[in-house]
Length: 408
Ligand SMILES: [Zn+2]
Image 1 (cartoon, rainbow, N blue to C red):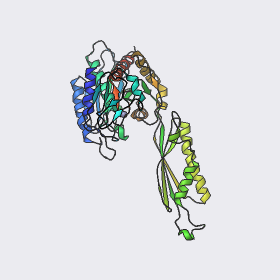
Image 2 (cartoon, rainbow, N blue to C red):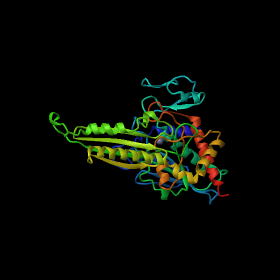
Image 3 (cartoon, rainbow, N blue to C red):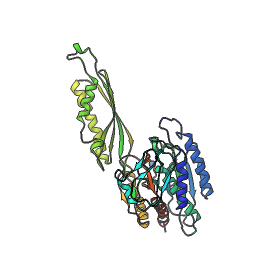
Image 4 (cartoon, rainbow, N blue to C red):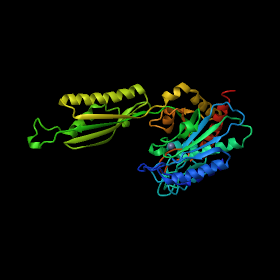
């Protein structure tokens, strides 16, 4: 437990923020610095096939020790932290035996149970927080620390028998590029788990189907004094299209399995207008219907004006991993079982977003997401209870053992 805590705090201190504006892989050199140290540490604890590639991915192996024919299981975590808040000079603090009161940090920042009632679930536990000036980076350095600690336990233990295990550490997850160069073939696992979830017990194998939609409107600008039957105001056509979409299918009116059209940008004048949305739905049929509806609206507006003044472009972004996980549901069952064995109640919920695991699942590596233990990601209120991290390590070790029994 002490080692796990120290390892996490050591990782948290290292500056690994990714940069959405960058055109390099990884997006920041500082991630490469972290990866080099991580690769050295993995070698030091006894991993084999430790490899850092030019894109900043580290892969490593824990060799089988007696069960050679078990499936190869992988564990994946990302090393970057979100550019939404500074991750430089992270000064993690340990609150011993949390007493249920407001946690005062520097900078006038405090974690007040009235605002963050989840913290009351951890009364009596030791909690790691920021000092109020940075994010903590438990997303996802907790996942990294948990995987490395589990690896160390497995490499040292003679009693725990297991098959081959692969470890993967990725850059740039927070800027949506975490799997762009992830070599699934080289990784060579039959299935894997990302340790990138939040609170203890989280287990996720469903996420949104996602598309981006862009509408371009060509109006006709005429002097307003002489505009009758001539002017077409592109901005008003944009307004018309927006008003034809269902009002209650917006992020601010939806939750759980409800999908939405989210208007992300609108710009326009009389001559030209442009609208951007993101379209999200867990259900593939409803996702397709949403895209179709937008197409029909555009068609009807063009019909009304008697010409094609509106142009629509829709691009799929990612898909619900459920479609890829369903045929191999045992992968989820193993994680559930591993949690129950560790005394952790599995909390299965659908992600209202995407995950690296979703992309990996479509690339041929089924990859549900399990908890790393943290709360309030991407800001100074981030915290992680130490016992949740300990349980995550236990869950990894249990998964490995369950997978080892699969071919016996
Ligand atoms: Zn994350």
